[in-house]
Image (cartoon, rainbow, N blue to C red):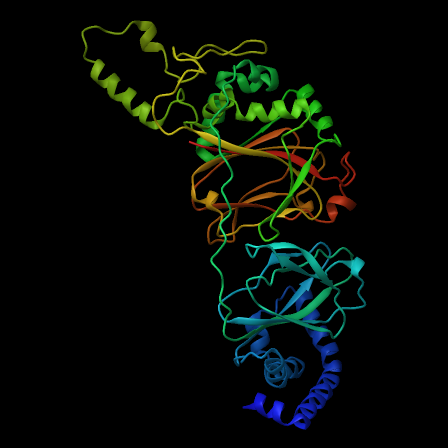
Length: 495
């Protein structure tokens, strides 16, 4: 009824607006006090959460709450043409140097209009912390930033929450300033949401037939030693992850490092922004050394080596738990056989890929014990596959956890090898983080490290993301690439 009166009696609408302006003017000194109170709470390590600001009884908070809940809500409902409920979420947020809020759409049941009231000091766009608004593609995914709003004292911004209301708070780039705000949502009838867009899965491929010579050409000889591989597998099976430092031979790694700066490499930005932001190398036209490195990670020999490192059955020659059980059963059956094994056979230990006692030193090659050699056809079963890419990370890049990622629904072995990150610190971001689904506690954090091969086995309940690479990677990184970030080879293997 109030909206009908406003339309039928313009003088009442004008009166309402004048009253609102007076109350906003009266609120200005209260905002100064509110800013001081909120800042004081933050400095003590406290946080004004949603419930805090709804229940606080101090005059400065109550006055702010009153104008938002009552007259402003009525006015906003009128101009938006939406019946807003009495429920209003309200909280405070503080952003300081390198803080960022990545792309999202705010959509939760009941949220209809989002608002932000800025309590900032003098602020320029160059300070960062802008509210960036995205347009959307045909699948309702964020496409590109179409508007950036710079925070300003006592400025209130509001927008409709919808399937395409993608936005972000850009990284705060200046030290010594605090981007303080009060924000929340007015509730009302939700807009109809289209079906969730599921991205096409990344293509997977079985191994590439390749002679084992490729391993000895590339890999540090210490990792080709059979006893070292046994120790690696033991550690991996205990922890489900391992880091193998100095994995490539020095000369090979140096060649990779130099090739990655080649300006002829074509890099493609991966998005959308609510899921990821980084550069992926197009494999057509890669420098020869990088193309060979990608081939190595896809090679049959690498599948076999990873089986030895992890105990996973990534090759049909690799042992599995079932194979070990069958071998134990066979040993029990043969123990009473009148044809006893020779002492050599009794003392020998079975290894699915390399024989015991064939100690591998630099220049020596371990041999497979099976008559079937790499390149032969595997028996009929599920075929191990992999997917992989060469990525470039720099300031502003990240990946996010999202509930439409079908690749998080399988057991998998992740492989990462970074380059160009000598002197990198976890404070710069770019850290690959693993968490349990539905939990905040970090299970594992992998900081980029030159020429270190990381292997991580994750189950269906483990999620991963790469933390936002922040401004410190430019101002504090003492690496050779002067703010150009780092690169990594990222592969995933499936049994």
